[in-house]
Image (cartoon, rainbow, N blue to C red; front, side, top):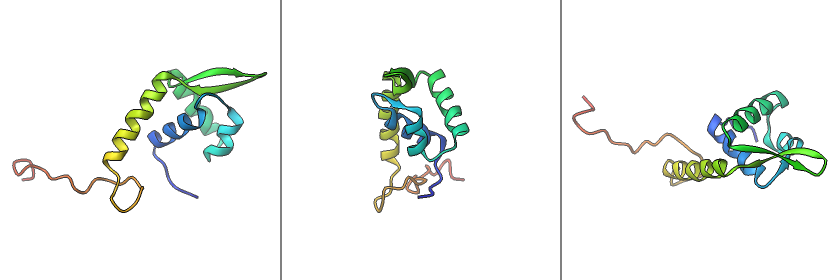
Length: 104
């Protein structure tokens, strides 16, 4: 599946995959991005305290932090507001009506 994702969607996917702990190679194979791109996201997310580095046996891995779980909660809330009735794709909300005073 070749779906273009925005940055927030990629962050959410990595947080979902990381859960209670996952190795980097699992994120790489399941995430559908290059190693360079994954490294940039991991750096961004650990610096923002959305992910935590953890020891998984003798390997280093990542898990979703409490702040990352909170991000996911709000991400799901926001995306549920802009889903269409017909499918699960996130689209621009066409139902927004501007007040008459702003539309002129």
